[in-house]
Image (cartoon, rainbow, N blue to C red; front, side, top):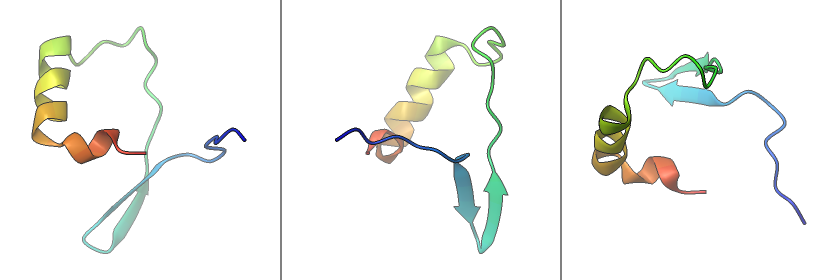
Length: 48
């Protein structure tokens, strides 16, 4: 059985909910080094 996300992802922080916007792959406003740093600092972001 496939698991698919059929809705926009939500960010819930301090009792407030925000719908996250999709960023096009071509809009590379974050370089790979910054992305690696963020994932290292927040490994839970990669959990299913």
